[in-house]
Structure formats: structure tokens, C-alpha cells
Image (cartoon, rainbow, N blue to C red):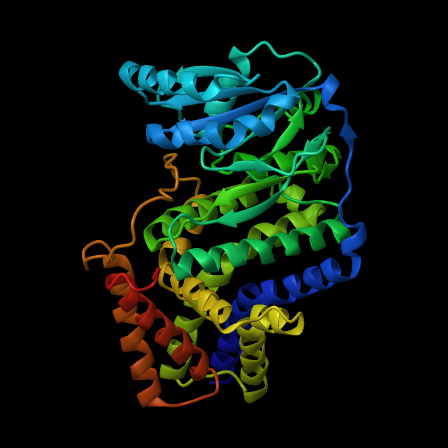
Length: 455
């Protein structure tokens, strides 16, 4: 019995640390953001007159109206930078390209911006599409490359950044949903965390939409890695390994957030897969630069909570619940992690009832998709094949049938039965964690199936 209690205590503690360490990590970074905000941002600017800006816009079966809308939103902002917009149209027919080109001509009338269309056969991933475009273009040494998603808008452009840059994102949603608003709020908090990270560690991840690099550093870092899904974060890890500084450019990028459960699910599973893949690829670099590992391991939070719930219920059923001190420690960690972002906003005078609802919707969405995030992590560690699928951010909210969310439904039934059996068998403080998680899972799944999560 003693051996069983020791084993269960160890497993619960390890899982709890992996699950809730993000709360401690983000607390430190948010404190650093608030304390050092005035001197967080570092710029390395050069005059736009001596720079040629190349904007790469990879499109994978995006609707023509979205492709054209990108040009409408950005053409006036880019023309004073002698910009060239390069559309990489992946898996488009000749007729579709001709239709897009005819619409471009009316938008470009009166604007001093060059547009290049590069048709592409089916690319393995975004990195291969970008590298193919860079090989096809004959770029001058003073070129600055920026990669933008087709639904992004470049704003507040001052001067262009040299070396490697990662601008701040500002989220927006074209679908008025509570889940979308929660994502917008989450992006705001996330970039406060990143700015805090930069103030302490002098490193931040470069993110796909808005990534900037001059041609010299792009070549030095080997362009974009085609063996990973998250080529943007991979680029920043290579920069850390080679001692290349990453700066905040003096601009921001408005990024459309996924406002429905299915869109968010596809995005998060892909990001979880990519994060695990990068840990596997750069494990030694992660050990030398722990901040890289701390950033990538954040995807364990919701997957770890799922595993922790199963372990707690199993320990109770096996009469191997950890000692009271361990239970109190883990439960306090759970409460702190749950309250971190609302308390942060409250202390800054930014918390409202609506924001609390938005955060709750996002949390429920992540809880429901945690089994698939866990699958993404495992698939990434094993380097299983993964197809490049853009996040469908403009789909309308709708309820999912039991067949469409069968994995989430099976896990929900399993967790509910396991928790009820454990509760009937015995009760301990840790069961409060299991009950909270299962309640969020059940209520979140009901909302997903009834199309109420996004509304």
C-alpha cells in the first residue's frame, strides 16, 4: 500500500507540474511585462528608401474573394515601401487564377505596388511553398521579406526592421461570437506574455503572419525548414541557436482569429503537433535555451489536465490516493491556474462580466478538444505524417452531430463514468479537480453540439 501511494503521489505531482507550470511561467512574464513595458520593445530600423519590401502571401485553396480582399486591405499601406506582393497560389486552376488576376487589375489602378502571382502545384506544407517562391524570385540584397496570412492586415508601419522581426498581433473576428471575442482577448494577453518573455530572455518566437527577415539572415538561417509544420517557430529556434537577435518591428499585424469550435480545433491540433515536433527536433537546443522548451511545452496544459483527471480517478478507485499534503498542493495549483487570467485583468481594472464569459468559452473549447490536442502532441513526437490544412476562419457557427465529434463524445462518456465511479467509491480533495474538469467537458460538449459555444 505504501509503495502504491508513493507511485500515485509521484505520478500526480509530475502531471500537475507539467499541467500547471504554465500558470507560474505566465505570472512571471506578465509581471515582467508590467514592470518593464517601457523598455521591452527594441527596434533596429532602416530607412524605407533603401529597402525593398517583399510580401509573401501563401494561399492554399482560399476563396478568391479573400485573396482579393488582402490586396484591398494592404495596398495603400504598402505602396510607399516600394513593396512587391507575391501571391503563392497553391492548388488553383488556370480559370481561378485568371479570375483573381482580373480582379487585381481594378484594385491596383492608381497604386504603386507590384504584384506577382506564382502558381504552385500541391505543396507539402507552407514552408515548401515559401521556399519555392524565394527560389523563383531574384531578390536584391537589400530586400526585406515578410510573410503574411491571406486574412491578415499590416498596420502602423513606421520603418522596416532589419535582421529578424516578429510583430505584435492584434486579433479580430468577422464572426461576432463569444468564442471569437475570447480569442481576441486571449491574443492580447498572449502578446503581453511574449513581451515579458523578451524582457527577461531576449528571445521570442517568430510567428507565421508578419514574420520579417532581411535576405542575409534568411539565407544564414537556411530559409524555412520543410520538415516541420511550424516553420515560423522553427525559424526563431534556429535564430536562437545561431545567436541571431529577434526584434519587434515597428508595426502590428491584425490577424483573424478562428471564431468557431471546428476552426479552433484544426488550428490547435496543428500547433500542438508542430510544438511536439520541434521539441523532438531541437531537444538539445531546448536544453541549452530552456525558454524555448518552456514556450513549446505550454501545449501540455490541457492534455495534461485530461491525463491528470484520469490518474486521480484511477488512484481513488485503487485506494491509492496521495497524502493530504500532496492533494492540497495540487489543488492550490489548480485553483491558481484557473484564476490567473481573470485575476490579472481584475488587478489591472480590465475585467468585465463579458470578458469573464469570453474566457470561459475559450476554456470550455480547449477542454473539449483536449483529447485531440493530446493526439496532436503524440503524433508530433512520433513525427507522423501531417497534411498542411489552413484554418477555416470564415465558416459559420453550427452544431456538430455525434458522428462529427465522436472522439470528444467517447472521451466525455469515459471520463464521466470514471469520475462517478471514483466519487461513489471514495472522496478526496483531488476529486474536486476531476469534478470541475468533467463538468466543463460535459457542458462544453453540449454547447458544441448545440452550436452555443461560439454564440
